[in-house]
Amino acid sequence: MSDNAENVKAPKESLFSKKNKKLITEPLGDNNPITIQVLGICSALAITVQVEQAFWMSVSVIFVMIFGNLIISLLRNLIPSRVRIIVQLVVVASLVIIVNELLQAFVPDVSEKLSVFVGLIITNCIIMGRFEAFAMSNKPFPSILDAIGNALGYAWILIVVALAREVFGSGKIWGFEIFGSNIPDEETGQMTGLYELGYMNNNMMILPPMALIVVGIIIWVQRSKNKELVEEH
Amino acid sequence: MESTLDIFVKAIFSENMIFAYFLGMCSYLAVSKTVKTGVGLGAAVIFVLGITVPINYLLENYVLKEGALEWLNEAYGKGGENTIDLSFLSFIMFIAVIASMVQLVEMLVEKFAPALYGALGIFLPLIAVNCSILGGALFMQDRQYSTILDATAFGIGSGIGWFLAIVAIAAIREKIRYSNVPPALRGLGITFIITGLMGIAFMSFMGIKYGGDKKEKAEVVKTSQVINDQIQE
Image 1 (cartoon, each protein chain N blue to C red):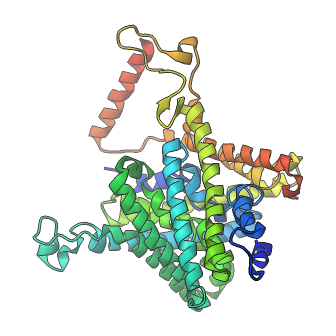
Image 2 (spheres, rainbow over the protein chains, first blue to last red):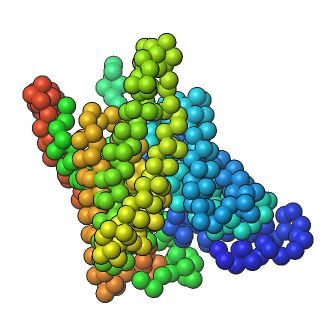
Image 3 (cartoon, helix red, strand yellow):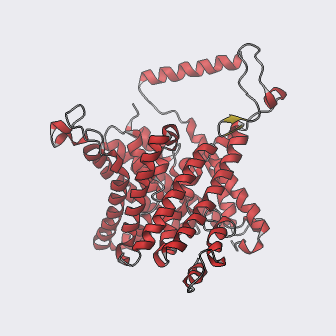
């Protein structure tokens, strides 16, 4: 994180210089907010039962992060450092209220399923973490890029976990049955697709603890690929 | 209706903040390296949840809820001429209450209980952005507890549940240092997986039968009979 900050301070760079590109690409891989920085897990895991919820959650987080980072970055010289946490909380809370109202207006059933977890974006550590580590000390444009990178890094983990859980847990993607229907037909009493052959959904994937285990496996894969990320203990 | 004791026990075990909702995971993962710090943060969480949930309950019921301002003027009440619904403000109000309460508690503890401050001191500021505190407030709002006593029981119960979780994982992490974990899983990865397994273990608490009134019990018996019949068929 600290070397990012140094990079961006370099004078007069083009709009999409290598350093700026790095701001977007790094959080997607080797500096992922969830698997490497361990931020923002609180609200991430509970809503990964279905891809649809995970998608809307990601969209909300992307929105809040981009505007939050932009606002904080514009205000960075005006905020006294003693009250900065409160200022940051107020900015996020206002943005989250907007998101919540929009979700309730346009996708009411998703909003109902997400219930309290939209509100919990306020205390999502990624957002506060990026405000603190990046937006408070950088210009608006790099801050936006940083927000996009980190929010996308968060989003792809969320969607991969949701995909794994929805496919294996309920045999669906976005509510669409991919393995056929496991509810017996009223007339024939037959199930369709794979279920006819005896395939069964793994109900365990729907249980909350499996989200943690799936993320654990993603971490495992990622760290086996890149040995530098391995922790001592 | 659930009794206060039911709410309390439920909040500790079957609706544990960490294992059922993953709230407060960021600090849970970051501060669980040793049991000592785990106990400190856990105690601080119990303390702050026990204070902020009742306060937010009062706020919710006398200011924010639709028609809650009836005590000011009858016209503002539900069904009055000018019904006021401030619930869209709840995020920002809750987080403001939490941030200021944490600050206040910190000052009070420092002044009147220096020994406690020595133990909790460094953890209190961390707590303002702990998802479990805001989560407690939002769940309280979502579940519409009928009395302030129930809300307090829920707050303290959730705090104790969080405390149990962090102390348990800290103890396991202290021991696991001597085990031969695959390198890529060391640290974060194995912690995720252990938390998942602990979550599965905690799910067994879902079987606890909470006493309700007789009507509900009769329904439970009825549904279990229906299930039995289905199995036999």
